[in-house]
Image 1 (cartoon, one colour):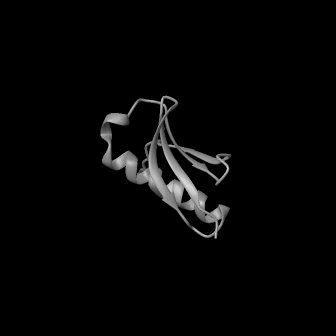
Image 2 (spheres, helix red, strand yellow; image 1 turned 90 degrees about the vertical axis):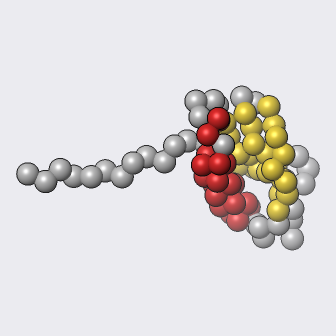
Image 3 (cartoon, helix red, strand yellow; image 1 turned 180 degrees about the horizontal axis):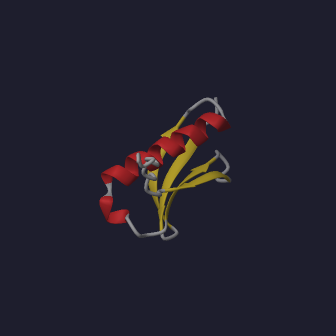
Amino acid sequence: MPWFYFDLLVEDHPESQGRNDPGNTEGARDRADALAEELRLARSGLEGKHCYVRVLNVVNGEIYRTPLLPIPKPFVEATP
């Protein structure tokens, strides 16, 4: 099984978030999305900065990048 490496990019400066073996590229993308959500909630000081979680394969090729964006509030329809 392939290893994937996860970085938090804060204004293009990488901070390693470790490595994982999610099984395949799709699993690595899902893990990156979950990690981005966890970091968004845990590190409020990142708000307003250009932050991403990126996934690298074993040869340091970037295969995925997802932003740490706030979750949009659900649309609530007004009742008359």
